[in-house]
Length: 159
Image (tube, rainbow, N blue to C red; front, top):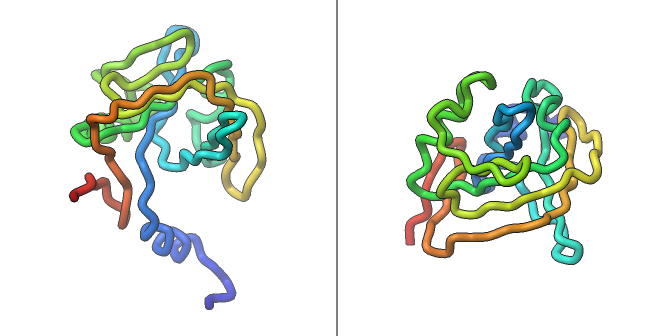
């Protein structure tokens, strides 16, 4: 085992763990604010809780945390372009991305799953803030296949 773990070693090793790809977003002052996130984790079934983590260097996180409700969209196969679009600078990130807004929560249209959440608890965790979120509503399209992040690449499932 390695005694001093570098960020590159951490990134390389954890690239062997497949994660789903999601988008967290909210409408704030008439604008959709959000970002891609592959840190979505189920925390509890009763009460229903999930978590996301946000880098301290993020310029979107301080704005997003002002919203009372957030939408989490789980991306499905065929939405690779949405993910590509969301890599743009924050001010133009959602240009051309079809979104649905329910209350303040914003969702990518046609997502595999949509989860409406309320931020509850923040935990400072190294270079990230871990956010515990209460689930208010959710739905899933069982006919869709997911996009996953594995080996530092976006992929679809086969078989």
